[in-house]
Image (cartoon, rainbow, N blue to C red):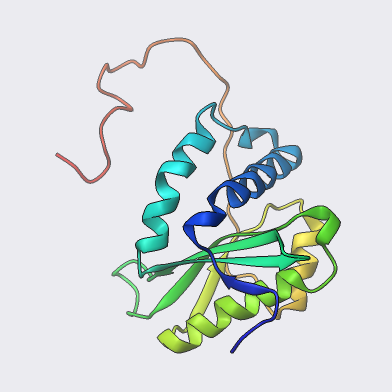
Length: 177
């Protein structure tokens, strides 16, 4: 299907989507100060964006308003860990609409584009996350018929400047010998 304000992103969209992505991350940080941005966040994103555009397991959609990109969705193919039944799924990494353009249906059109891709892939579900205190996001996803599947908790630990007790502790990569 086609949505009048939504299309796939192109390389020409990189700068504007990067701005919106930074706005999204700053908005998330305003909800939870544990989500502060790294100094090189945008540089890393700019390095990855061209690769994502070429990756057939990913999609980046943009929503336009008055010929200006006002929002985007980033999604990739995903599947559960191999201990669970095999199923094709999508993971919606990010969905963001610039605040002045909200409540005009752009986010819903972005979600519909993602759902259409899921249907073409015969994906069984689309997974996503929201911050626990983002009531507007929770309300939006409920309006899209999304239902909670899991809850993520964190155990916060005090910051310390002390060296780890075992000099290799914390530097080992999980799953590597």
